[in-house]
Image (cartoon, rainbow, N blue to C red; front, top):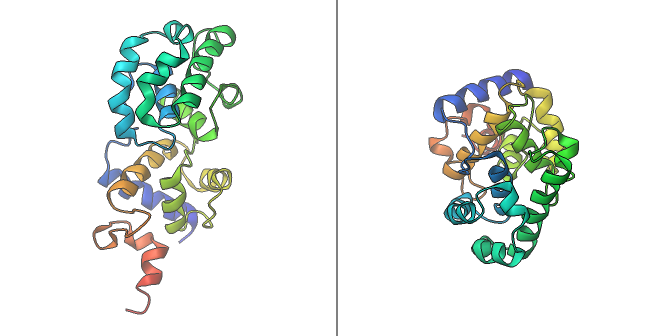
Length: 216
């Protein structure tokens, strides 16, 4: 089976198992998704979703974030870890969006990468979830691990290489939701340690499973 055919089959199975291929972060406004993703670095989405309601209530607009005292933001996001750097990046990003981008979250990779604390993973997530840009790949830890196990990549752990390799095989209109579904699958079934292979419906395409069972 060619990689594109394998990818198409995996996409369809993931859609069956996880019909709602959406980001687990809760956000009413585009800039709030950007800030939530920044908070999620080295932190669980569950924790971020516990923290952001008070944060967004205290700073209900982009202008409010731009004028915020960084120390107050630090206090509100303290439990997310690395709170000083995250607070600094959030306030600085709000200021830059107002001064350079008309008070909006940028809609292209180059401009998104200019924002403090924003890398390709965050930028792709914004492009996919906010602007519905086809072909985006969110190469997070779940995507890197599972796409390698499924033979969609060569097993590299380099996010940039994973992004390039998946772009070549995934249907562009499915790639964003595919990555969100891999996150759900990685949390529920295909964990880094002790994946629950016995109940995984992706076994037919899984190199890890099939190599482990080749002698059975």
